[in-house]
Length: 263
Image 1 (cartoon, rainbow, N blue to C red):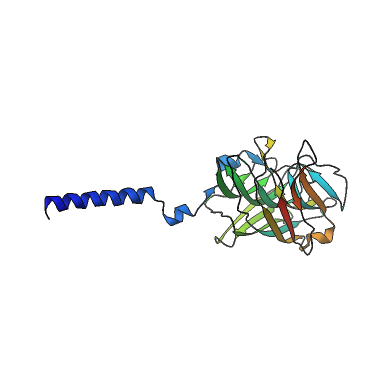
Image 2 (cartoon, rainbow, N blue to C red):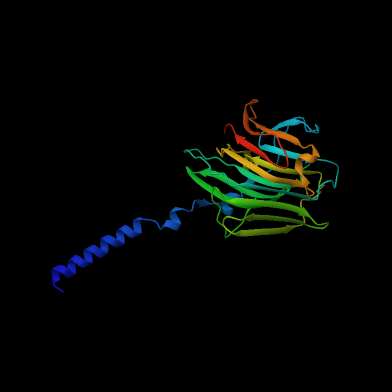
């Protein structure tokens, strides 16, 4: 090979290498940012700003929850479950958050055992994740998983008589995570919830990410459709006004849609 052709070969190889480094692989480019424990450790899902908490089979409002909560006496609920398609979040430059979950307790007391997903906008970039939480501790991210918009999820929380088992399965990505915990101190198992939420981040309710619409199906408590318990409908409103942030539709056969309205 002549010196000229050899030099040309080096130049072509260097150019090809530069292009390869500058272009992410298809797998990398198709995977959105994922929730880290560093982010999750600042998040919590405590109910905030509940209006008229004593009402039963009614429409109430909260500043961070939207969905349905079946309520009852101590020990009324030992399991809750639902499925949903992970929303694809629409991001601008603002940092916003949204979560989707099932849980026991939390509506009328400070206990809560739950698991679910989230769709956030952090630094203008869509960030997805999966987590579990037992109050008063903060959220814990499931490690080693990938979550994408459009993934199909099923979540369950079950009390076995001594512990709570929280299971989250992503049938699209093909993974399942299960956590067993003693539960919150003073738990009562007095409510069962299926919720879309603006989580609390760093001690304040976050701006709600534009998740579009999330549809919950197979929402059950104690193995029966959630609507058979005449659950309270919870509408998310702004703390400074009655403006709606997220609105659940009517529930029937364990299914309902929850629609984003404002951040």
